Every structure is written in structure tokens, then in C-alpha cells.
Length: 443
Image (cartoon, rainbow, N blue to C red; front, side, top):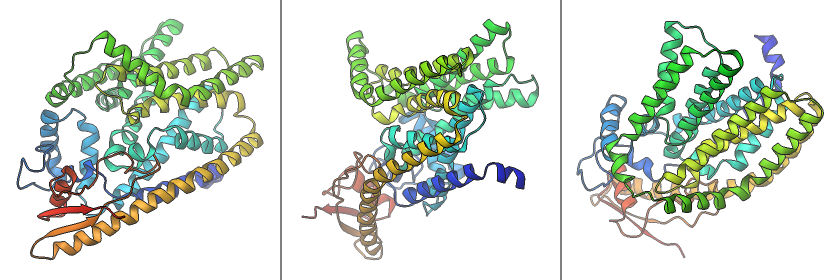
């Protein structure tokens, strides 16, 4: 144990720092928008439809998710996680666990890059992976820090990346491996509408490659892929999803969505594509990449494109839905980084140092914006807590100022408004057991 700690000491130090950065940001992010809804057994998106809402508990989650499946959407895996954490009177359990999940995401990305490049682990590539996720995960606040958003995007990435890693190994056919394939496959398929299927596509590509090269196919992986399909169908057949996504998809609309996604993303990612092309050329010239490395990179790029442009068939494509596509792009990038630069320890130290400086410059204004929202919401909470002890049970609170940073979970989401009959005013009144909450704008 001590020898392993010594061997991976720099990795432990780096990941511990990342953990505390994320813990700080999670702690400074209070409940946002849908979080107030998921405090209760799901029965309706309207707070007035059911006068007396029942607080969620672990044993009520299956019933709540059945209602959610029928009325809203089929993402029962993600929202089960959300509702589990919403049963507590404190957000601290989520803050700790979600910070660990973020560290686990970095570890899984690193593990895939190491395995598929054929190189040894380099601790000083971890800050580069962290920097990539910090700068390229879309709407970081909504997809990583917001409890409901994190459950849908960050936490689901652990499932479908775990599914990929599980199926990269040619596993023996036994009860344990088959059971793992069934469970992980089903969960990956039901994780979300675009990234889960893209992960399945990546696994299929690796299976086809092995079939062509070795004339073999893994029965365990085949079972896993079949059950991922069942999970996806189960999620997509949700009556709630069917009714909400029931639009007439014309070719003109799909083309328009393709163009919209391209315009929204290409300028952000073109530098990554260029860097990958450069690394590939250098790697080929110096014979640092082989055919397997190239194919692995291509497969994750295909998964990246599939996860992003699958949203062209959706009624809408908010940027946070590109989360999985960005993660697959990052894995493709770091396969090449490891292959070409993984052996250059001091060069990685220098690059990590530069990345650290750039991160700090970016972090300071993001933290200031998050911290401002935190204190404004704490002021609202204090007034609400005071109102809980009054006969009228009515609170009037100052509204939050406009957020400036996409690292802020409150950026661009619904919040308290002026009239007490506004949607979030009603849900927060339910949450805090008040008769009403109204707001006023601070001049």
C-alpha cells in the first residue's frame, strides 16, 4: 500500500486539489430550479395540481420515478440519483459525493487514454484533463454543479464510461461477468438520449474491429450491448417523453438543427480538432502511434460526433446535452497526448503549470459570480426561515441579480420572480412550507 501511495503520490496530490476545488464550488451552489420539484414524490410539473405534496424518501423513489416516467420523461436512472440526494435536509452529502464523482470522471478519462495509447500513467497529464473539462464542458454550472443537472450529465457519464471500459476487456463467460454486463448495459442505455447510445456505438466499433482482426466476438459484450438497447428503448418509450417530444420531424427541420448545432459548437472545438491533427502527424512521423491507437482515436471521435449531432432529431438542443460528446472528444484527444507526449515528464510538468495559471485566471471571476449568487440566495433563505415562524407564512425576498458566468448553476435557469404565483415561487413555497413567496428587484 505504501509503495503504491509513493508511486502515485503526485496523482493523489493533484486529484485531492481538484476534489477540494469542486467541493468549494458545490458548497457555494445552493438548490436551483428543478431541485425544489424533486424534493417531493413526483406527481405533476405543476405545484398547484397536488395540494399536499409528499416528501421524497428512498423507499418512495420507485413510485415517484414511475409517475415521472409516465408524465415527464424516461430518465429514471438520472432522476433516481437526484431524488436520493433531495431527501436530505442538507446539500452536504451531495456536495461531497458529486465532487468525488467529478474526480472519478477524470480518472476514467485518464484510464481510457492510458489503456488505448499503450503508455504508462503520467500524473502530470491529469491537470491537462481537468483543464479540458473545465474549459470545454458546456454550461459547467448547469451540468456539473446544479444538483439536478449533475445527476443528468456528470453522474451519467460515469455509467457510460464504465460501460465502455467494462467492454474493452475480453471477459470470460461466467455468472458474475454476465450479470455485470446486464446491469451496466441496461443502465448505460437508459442514462440519457444521446451520450448513452454513442457509448454503445463506440463499444460496437471496438467489437467489429476485434471481429475483423481476430475473428472473435465477446459473448459478454454482446449481452451488454443487447441490454443497453433494452435500457434505451425503455427510456425512450416513456409516455412522458413521447408526449413532450411529439413533433413532426421534417428533413428541413433536421437540416436546420444540424446547421444550428454546427454553428453553436464548431468554433469552440476547431482548436481541439487542429491540435489532434497536429499530434497525429507528429505521432506518425516519429512512429509514436500505431494503427490501434489511430483506430481508438477515430472510434471516440465517431462517438463524439454521434452524441452531439443526434440532438438534431430532438425538438431542442441545449448546450449541456453535448456533455457526453465533449467527454468523448477529450478521450480522443488524450489518447494522442499520451501516445505522443506521455513519456515526456518535464514537458508535461511545464504544460500543467501553464494550464494551472490559465485555470486560476478563469476561476477567479467564475468563483466571484458563484459566490455572489450564494450570498444572495442565503439572504433569501434567511427571510424565508423567518417567515416560517409567522402566522401568515408569507415571505418577500430580494431577487437575485443577473448571473454573468456559465460556471454559475443559476445562469440561464428559472428562478424566483416577482409575483407569488410564478412557477418557482410556488415550488419554493411548497419546499419551505410557506403560503407564498413574492420577490422584489433590488435597485
